Amino acid sequence: MSRLVIKAWAKTLRRSLSERSVADVVGLLSMILGEAVDEGLFGSNSCRNPRLNSGDQPERPHAEADEVTALAERTPAGNPVLIVTAAYTGMRWGELAGLQWSRVDLDKQEIRIDARDGALHEPHGKLHLNPPKTPAGVRTVHLPTFLAEQLAELAVREADRAVRVHRPGRRPAPPLHFRRRVWLPALQGDTTLGWAPIKPHMHFHDLRHTPKTRLIEDGVTEVLQHKRIGHKFRGVMGVYSHVTRPMVDAMLAGLQARCEQYGSKTL
Image (tube, rainbow, N blue to C red; front, side, top):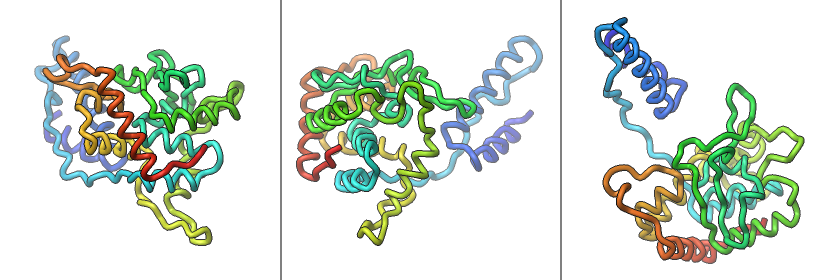
């Protein structure tokens, strides 16, 4: 198995998988081959550091604040909270879909993403509450006042439900169901209602680009940016930089001001 063969295989994988998934698959193969080398089954690991060339990747879209409001207004009851929370917190789909009210502290205005069952996953077509995608996903997500108030209103109406989809005794709605029934119609618009299309090729995951971009605009420190969206801050800065309450308060003030400028649907 030559390095050229591995690179050609990776190129084939890209036809149906994301770059991250391709990297994970190739990385797993490298680990397996590495073990085989250690056991004397192979002379070398031809998959070690293959330097995969993914080519130029198109820039993913992100939603502006007014577009977030418009998308939320186009969705059925119970769904606007998902759109707005995703766009202002950077939480992943699984973190939102599996979020339980017991993890939402409205007095402290924060959401806790638990290390044991902080995200909804769909392995082999079955939905389960499991740990977040990465260890960095275990975090406290601080909420601007407007979002805490909207969640409080929703909690009064649906206290027996999860924030989004999971009701005790019922099977949670899968991501594909949400995409077809809620997300795509909101993006595509409806001429009879005067709704113009909003970036029809935008994925729900692209809403994670929105808060990241806003935080950069507001001058939020990089360590808090990473913490906010559940990414590990690597390198020396990641070791010696820490999030403080004044940093969080300044960030929340910026998010609150943005909402007051563009408005947000009452949930």
